[in-house]
Length: 110
Image (tube, rainbow, N blue to C red):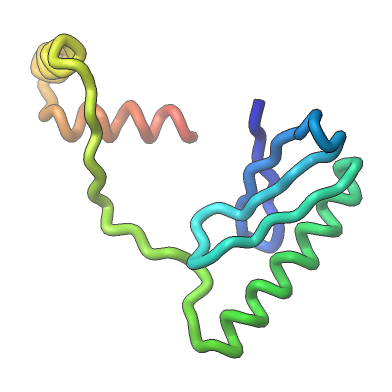
């Protein structure tokens, strides 16, 4: 199971790793990697703050924008049967396939 943690406006995914008996956090949407580990959630937050600061400082030194930019486009591969079913449902709802999928994704993340 994964969850998220927000630190200074940046989101990180969090997962427990039973092999090392620690929580692992990794910031998402960055122009590089920034991960952190700890035994408990309070320590994980502190380690995340440190990891993020180091990452942001390095970006500043190198003149790199810390957040990755997204184009708003991505390819999705599904079975022909699912494609047909989704297209029919979108048409039945009076929406384009793109709008129907966009609405579903938006609902899923919010």
